[in-house]
Image (cartoon, rainbow, N blue to C red; front, side):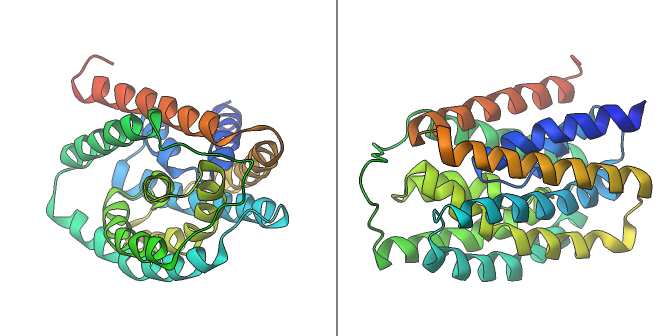
Amino acid sequence: MLYFIISLLLFALSFLAGMLGLGVAFIATPVLGLFGFDLKNVIMPWSLWLNGLTAISGAIAFARARMVDWRTAIPLLLITTVVAPIGVWLLNFVSTELVWWLYVGVLIFLAVRMAFPPKMDDSKALVISDKTRVKAGGLSALIGVFAGFLGVGPGFLLMPSLVMVGYTARIAAATNSVIVTAPSFSAFIAHLQDARFDWLMLALTSVTAVVGAWLGARFMTKRVKSLTLSRIFAAALVILAAQRALILLGVL
């Protein structure tokens, strides 16, 4: 029964993540914590693996819809892939509780920024300057380290960062889905030495997560506007931050 529940849950979470242009780890990490799995040796490598798979699934759907800004995606993919293992290394020097509180703080900050985004007009073709791409590249280096440190992949930080420097939420989500693929796997590899897997659970959740992310990305390309997408993102972050804070405080 546990296999069925977690597989179905990750399908639903991956649908939302695919719609937002993210890998599923930013949602899966705290949710899997509810089942009592070990954070560093089970949840982090498991979430990072699913993060890469769901990001690839969503990226294919977005690429087919011609929504990806490749001139941003490729450099940022390379940057975040190289720096992500630095964050994993830093994890050796801090407590698990501190990691979770940092996670809560980041979620709250991003939720506020995404709830009140810059004006976005999906009806006009987006013109992205090289200066904007340079800003995005600088942010991606810091984000790659921090995301590897949290064990969630860089997507949940990159997507709102791209919005803040001038991308619409739809283009940011589509481009972000490409960026987060390789760094998710590079951070996953860094965790492999100490990782512990239930291989049947890993296989089942891999399939359901990929399908969920594909359907979520397809839904976004056809039905969701940038402002709506931005506020859905903000709401998801608030819920996750509140849930994890209550656990840390011993309420749940």
